[in-house]
Length: 153
Length: 153
Image (cartoon, rainbow over all chains, first blue to last red; front, side, top):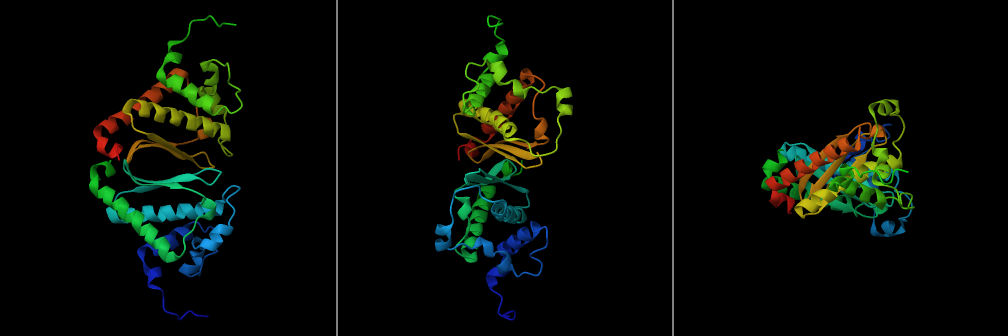
C-alpha cells in the first residue's frame, strides 16, 4: 500500500541489484516475480535475537545453502565486472554446517572464508550485508591488482 | 596365501603410501586393519570395460566421494611435504556427479580440475593412478616455485 514511498538508495546499489539477480536466477518457479528487492532479500536479514533462536543441529537445508551460494555468486559477478576476468566461486559446506567459501580468478585465490554455523547465516540488515559484500569485493580487487599475472593465468 | 611374494616397488612409493594413509584415515571401523596396500586401494582400479558398465545416473554415493577426496588429500599432503607450506584441498561435487577439485597453497591455486562422471571415477591401474598423482604434484610444485610470494600469503 506504500508503493509510492521513496525508494531506498541502498536498493539501487550494484551489490543489491546483483543479489536480486542471483536470487531470481535460482527462483525456478517464478515465486519472486513482481516482488520488490527488499522482499526478495528479506531472508538474508536475521537479527541477533532471531539468530540465537535458530538451532544449529541437523543438516542446513538446501534453500539456506542456495542462499549462501547466491551471495558468493554475486560477489564473483561483481569482481568479474570490475576486473574483466572470470571469477569462480566454490562453496563447500559439510553436513554439520561448517565449510569454506572460495573465489578464484585465474590461479589467484581472491577470497577465502571459513563458514561456521551456516544454519544461522544472515546479516543484521541489508545495509550490513552490503558492507560485507563491498569489503570482500575491495579486498579481492586489491589482491588482483597486486598479482595481475597470477589472476590472468 | 602369497604373502611371501615379492613386494611390488610401486607400493613402496611415497604416493601409494600416502594414499593408503588417507584411506586408513577414513576407515572409521578399522575394516582395512591388516589389509595389504593393494587391497585397500583396489576400489581405485576400474578398467575400461568396468567403467562402461557403471551407470552415471543418480547421486554418486558417499563412499565414492570420500574416495575422490582421499585422492586429493593425498596430493595436498605430498605438496605440503615438498614445499613446507600448507596445501588445502576443496572438492565440490554436485548431485549429478559433476564438480571441481581445487588445491590452494596460500593465495595460489596450485591445482584446479573439473570432475565429470564421478560415478565412474577410477584408474586403469595403480601405476596409472600414481602417474596422475605425480603429474598433479609436479605441476603444483612448478607453479609454487614460480609464485612463491603468493603461495606464502
